[in-house]
Image (cartoon, rainbow, N blue to C red; front, side, top):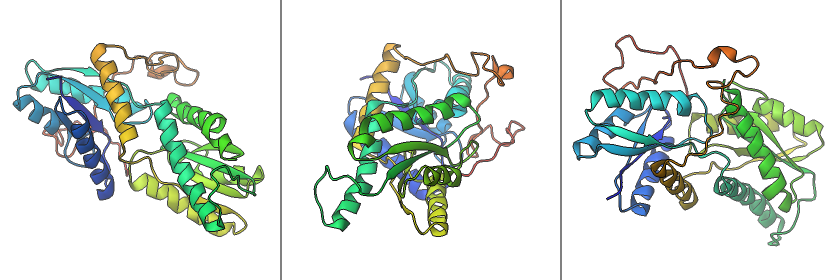
Length: 313
């Protein structure tokens, strides 16, 4: 029996998002039948990470492979989850773990994003009465790739990198002229700003592509803001793609990240990490102590350890 996989999600107040996460954990359990698979959240929704660790520990597991189910390496993956896992080591004698890296701009993730884009373009072709997959749109077409947004410049830069990789790889094949990045919170350009930039660059058909794994408050907000902008600009054809979602391709990436972590072959790029490198404007973050989020259902919550930091995912 291999070490169990502990999948750590951020958490959301959206019931559909929680259900997506739970369905994905079940998918991984079927896919990785030779090991235990468990999942927990760092905040906002049950089950909390501490419950997942406790249950695996009660089954006799002392070493686990913990993976952040996140697209970019921002504060949650760099600080909150390692901090929470360190707290679990204090709670459980003999508990240890190998920690993997986020999904990042993995080729499979790019392929899944391209599939969500193609679903929108294929629907458009079907409505126009053509089934030719090579048929390019007749109007200038662009994609707005919308990430969550972060105070970590490395995480925001990763979203821009994904936009460029998507443009130079998959998008050009389908006749998309360009891909622009935007963010739904904490960073700019915002969704309306990104759409306005695309409009000024001449595109009249825009696919808004959410760079999110599962349903949630923020992906819904992306769609709402895109629809609001479309209502204010009737000359534009703005369509929204789906999130990546619970799928086999995503499970493939997690299985790869598990093997990396277990073997100790984790290829993180630390050259732009604000906690290691004195990036201009972020020098004060080098070596900063990392503390975990405190989940409402965690026993430590409510004992003066709150971080004064609210979310609405």
